Length: 423
Image 1 (cartoon, rainbow, N blue to C red):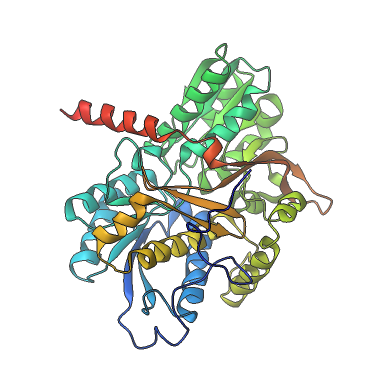
Image 2 (cartoon, rainbow, N blue to C red):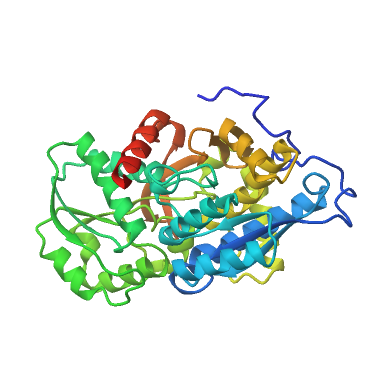
C-alpha cells in the first residue's frame, strides 16, 4: 500500500490533484518555455499519437490557464518523424538550432527515441522521451540528458508474463516487429516468463518488419508451430491489421494470445466486433468500475477529456492510453521545471536525478531519480465483450510499476555492461 509523501507530491486542485506555481495572469505576455516535440503523426502509430497529442494539448492549456510555469506559458512545437530515426534527428537539430527550444520531447518508436537521446547527449539538451517504450532508453543507454515520462517495456510486459506463468503452457511462439521495440519487448517478456516458469520453451520466432501489412505467412507459421500460446509485440495499426487477418484462420481460438498492446482502447476500440476475445493483455481501463472506485478523480478526468476531444473534432472522443500519456507528460515536464525554478537543463536534471512523485487521476506516478524513469500504475486483464457488444478488458488486476520494475542496482549493472561492451 502507498504511503503519502507530502514533500514529493504536487499540491492538489479539486479536479486533478495537480496545480502549477503561479496565478492565472502571471504567464500572459511572458516569453514561453518552448519544447520541441517530435513524434510519428503518420503511419501505424497514429492510433496512439493522435490521442497523445490531444492529451498533451489539454494539459498544456490547463497549465497555461493556471499561470504557466515560472510565470511563463508552455509551448509545444511539433514535428513529424515519419517513424524514421534520421528524420527525428534532423527535426531535433532544427528545433534546437533554429527554433531555439528549451527542451526536446516526444517519440513513439523506440528506434527514434534512442536516436534523439543520442543527439540530446551530444548537444547537451534535455530530452523528455514520452512514449517510446524500450527499456534501453533509460537503462543500458541511459544518461543524464534523457528522462522518460511514461512506463517502459519492463513494467507492463512483466504484467503479461506473470499472467502467462499462471497457465500450463510450455510451448511458446511469438511475433514481434523486427526493430528495437519488438526485440526489447520479446527479450523482457521471455526472460521474466523463463524466470517464473523455467520449463517453458520457444518453438518459433517471427520477425515481420515494422509496418508490414500482409501477415498471412506469419499466421500460417504460428498455426503450424506446435505452440500452445503465442506472444505478440505488434502494436498500433499493424497489430489491428494482424488481428483482422488472423480472424478467418481461427488463430486466437487455437493458440492463446498474449500481448501488451491490444487491450488499450487505442487498439481495441477500432477493432470493435473483430476484437480477439480471450486475449491476455494490458490496458488503460478508464471504464472499469473497480478502477473508478479506487481512483475517484478518474471519472471527472474522463468527462473533461471527452469534452475536450469533442470540442476539437476527435472522431472517437473517449479516453485512450495515448491521451493519458500525453497529459501526464506535459505535467511531469512542468513539474520538473517548476521544482528547478529554472529552464537551465542542468538544474532541471538535478531535480530529475533526485526524483519526485505526482498524483494523477489514475494513480501515483514516480519519477525515479536513479534512471529518470517514470513508474506509473499498470493494469492487466482479458479481452471480453460487454453487454453493449463493445470490446473491453475485464477481470482487471491493478499493480504499481514500483512492485514490478527492475531495481536501481539492476539498472546500474545494465549500464556497466553496456559501457564495457563499448570499450
